[in-house]
Image (cartoon, rainbow, N blue to C red; front, top):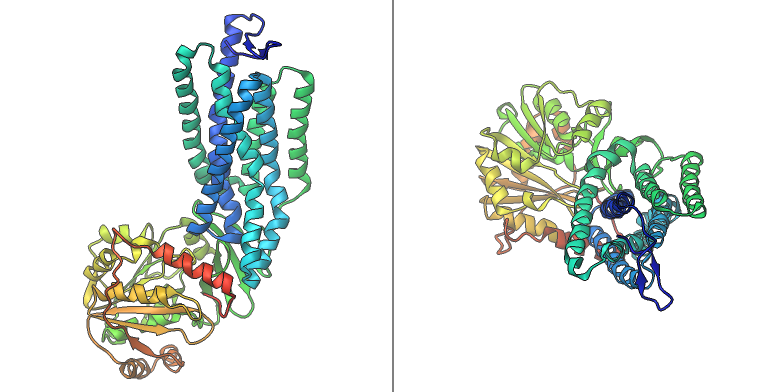
Length: 534
């Protein structure tokens, strides 16, 4: 039976007798509440990452901060909830906590807007203090609701424990239901709610569910009126504050969430349509109906066959790991002809859809595969003249695509004169990522070369080859084709530089690429910007 009152001496006493069915119903309601509170905690954490992604990205730093502060808020909630439950072990107090937490969850997407606008300014100025300050400001918005949701489990255990001999089983019930709810909360927003309804409405749906539980648990008309008012206020905010663009930008054509990331398609008058992901620092694909070359890293994938000593007529096959919206596949088809068989592997099906809708990704020689690039290679028997790796989730390259084992897998799928080309990001002065990827590739390929993009982009193309070539030979080979596109690239002020052997090799067992990139990001943010990535 639930405990819902205290004696004058402060000792708990049982409530007025109630029929067994009524008592069982109240117990069931408390247990259901623990399930939904656990679900809401993980759902808020996951959805918070989607709220932050358009402004702060999805780096390991951001995830560490989100997870760390969530655990901190829950720890405080467990402590306070346990003490409060001993002092006021009332069911009505539990549902009042739930109601206030629910209202706080529902307010988050509305209150966060002004702080997120500050973060956009911080990113534009690359101001480290403003950036991290605005990030902390947003995460503090979650402190009250998550702390209060953390209070639910110890409070529920206190309410459900009538006999200390059954305290363990009651605690096990509560934590089992809360954890199962958390499992549901981890998957439901990512797989269904955010892609279908968006981030703001996902917050509101969980807030309304919790408020519904509070209404069911309320025992006074006054409390019911307050909780109903909370729900109505959130409905009114949802109706009158119409969502505009999550991250407003000139030329916005499309904006939305996939199951994997936040996506924008932007019409840039000077460059064409751009595919932009998450915080928008980088452009992942470009399409201009009247211009093939972009000036960016995609153009330099076209040089890969000549590094391997192939002629234009010998280029028959290409694998793109990280197809994006199809910039490289379109360039290869235009330069080498539509007889070149191109396999394009792209992790996000929504990006594939947008590539076909907006970026004219309709080449008849392009086969599109929605999969992870390494997984695809492991299950493929095909060999290629060129393998192009452009698998950013800006600014990161997935660690399993930068290890010795992956590069060996790629080499095994190349023809004898094939070449692996990898796009690597950097800052204006920090080449550490380029250096470590080059040295890892050097452990698999006998010859490694790098082209540092001359202007506009902080990127380098790293090539793994099975034969030597000099900078002059590569320029001459591109010019000798007589192809206007290749000639234009050859006349740019770049240089092919060889990479010496190195002892730094990333493996599947140890590949701290994210830590390296995190360090590069922090140093750049705190030190100011001298250039922008792609």
